[in-house]
Structures are given as C-alpha cells and as structure tokens.
Amino acid sequence: MGLPDEHIHPHATGRAAQTVQQHQEPQELVFYSGWFCPYVQRSWITLEERGIPYKYKEVNPYKKEKHFLDINPKGLVPAIEYKGKAMYESLILCEFFEDAFPNHEPHILPSDAFDRAYVRLWTDHVAKQIVPGFMRLLQEQDTDKRKTYLEEYYKALRTLCEKVKGPYFLGEQFTLVDVALAPWVVRDYILKENRGYEREAVGNGWSEYAGKLETRESVVKTQSDKAHYAEIYGRYLRNEAQSEAAKAIRAGRPF
Image (tube, rainbow, N blue to C red; front, top):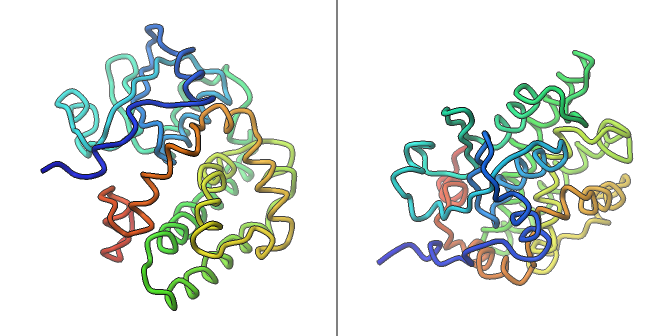
C-alpha cells in the first residue's frame, strides 16, 4: 500500500495554474516543483519576483521517479536542473538565483554587506523558530500542549515582528526574509481555523505585515485554490502526514 500523501491533487490550480502555463517552454533552468509545498513556494516566489526564465515541471515527491532521484537523492522538492547540473533546498535555491542571474531585478538580497548578513540572520530565525513552531502547533494532538505551542509560536513571530521596518522586513525592499516567511503566512488560516491562532494576538503591526506579504503579486501568483490544500493539511492536523518535515516534528529533531 502506498503512502496516503501520494494521492494529492496532481497539478496547480487558480493563479498558480496560470503561472505554470506561462512556463512550459524549454529553458536552461528546469524547476521541479510540488504545487502544494511551502518550501517550493519560497523558490517559486523568487523566480517570479525576479523574472527569471524557467520551465516548470510538476512532480509528486511521494512517488520518487528515478530521474528526479538522480537530481535530488533526498527525493524532495524544490529542485532544479541548470546547465546540466542539479541543485536543491529551498533557501539555497533562492540564493543561487541571486548569484546565477545577477542582471535580473529586483534582488532579494541587499547590496550592502551588513544588510545582506542581517537578512540572512533573520531568515535563519524564520527557518529555525517560526517554521518549526508552525509545524509543531499544526501537528500536536494534545490540547494542553497546543496552548503551549501557540504561545511559543506567538513569541517567535513577535521576535521577528519587532525588527520589521515596514512595509516589508527591511523596509521597501522585498527580501529573502519575506520570501522565507510568506508561504507560512498564506497558510496561517489553517491555524486560525483549527488551532486558535489569531494574527491580531501577535501585535506590533503583525497583521499589517502579514497582509503585505500575502498580497504581494509573486506570492499570489504561486498559490493554488484553498480547496485543494484542505486534504493535504488535514493529514497534518491529524498528525498523519508522511513528509520529511512532519516526520522530523514527530521525532523532535531539526529539519
């Protein structure tokens, strides 16, 4: 019997489907994607934000075909092929797109060396504090532990929010911090509907910042219809999902 996560909707819908259709011509850069995956959306936002030519290829990472495993032995999306070479990991890909396509603008890393390091520092906070906090709260089945995890999640968001200059993290420039965070912001309705989360409870202008992220054009055009996320995130809410992230949360280890 296959994994239940294999049986996902086979392709993007809504605005994301329109974006996919615009990227079917052959290109030097092939983007291996799963429409449903927030990690994919990080890299996809960056491609769209910067206007980089790419060919979109949908894969189901729960059905690991040989060619895809040759590209990424972990069998995870996102991944790319570029000029005959392969690369993967969402935030690494975002930075690779900066380096490989320097003439495409806007950039998601500032030109100033200190500001670049500062953006990387707070991107690390998103990766190590906010995303795991979201996942723990999403998957937890015990009511009392959910309350604890909700407060921990609020704390991680407030810590970041204190540094947001507005309208985006670093000010007017949309940077890697915003890219890294946006996919979880657009999915926070799942926590609102099922785990008691409220943007207003974070305070410090979080609702306004979250609103700017979720309405950014590159974010909107890489989202599918909400109806197709329901089945996927239902598995997380029941703690039945078999993604590497879900398994890491259950095991209490980093991912």
